[in-house]
Image 1 (tube, helix red, strand yellow):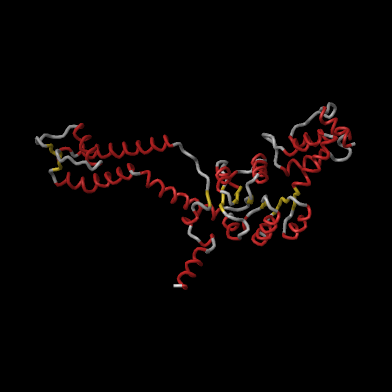
Image 2 (tube, one colour):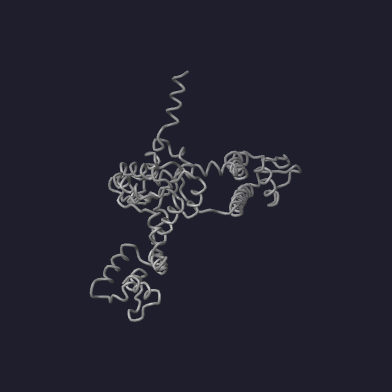
Length: 353
């Protein structure tokens, strides 16, 4: 008895990556096009009508093999009536096939159409099974194809903002995978077309399920510093070549994250504190930083913007009084007139000087 219990516990603790694809439905979610209930009902009704009309055509073409209770030949209306009561399994018996060919057609054609018609009518239950099968197929295909994507661990304020920034920079939603333990926030991420994984990223099998071993970048945006360290350690072990960017609250933990394998560490509390301190005397600096970090429609990728920024502020190419204007122009991809910097630019330049 104890041996069976231990075996059952081992099976329950099996790694997620060892489970079959259908067992991952609900853990790994692949986004798909959402259809309204009215559209789904319309499609089912249309399919039912198509099946019914197919049965009517088959019966009408062989109408000589049928007779009603008065031994009369069937009209088109009689064929429609017979097809309806046959497919709905009502079967009043007032019209019957009398020839061998008509009976054979009933067996090989009308009966399969009857089954198909019933499947459409009870499609509510079957749609659930179909949905699970479709999701399992999508999961299988996605796991074999996912490469060079970005894994975002944590979809709180920091993680959500990071995703919005990537989407604003032109990153495809299908190239972003969100990992979180909160199913509610994952629903929000899925509504944007993101692939989501429900589970704790401190476990290696959850990160493997998110494809971390094939990821180009991993963003750690957890709410706790100790969780961020553990996630970074696990991610670095799985993906030695991936770019890992982590966010923490306290500066004292920055060296732990770097030792854990993070390439870049963002101290959110200190960064916000510095901006608050600068904003006390120079409020326009906050606006400038926000302006630089906010993607604009049609803006270029970060690498292109950074290259353009370096060329724009190269010594000798831009006067000191308008260096911020050059940076903003390069960031937005527009050529701002150097001779007429904006009032905000002048204030920033003066403060910086």
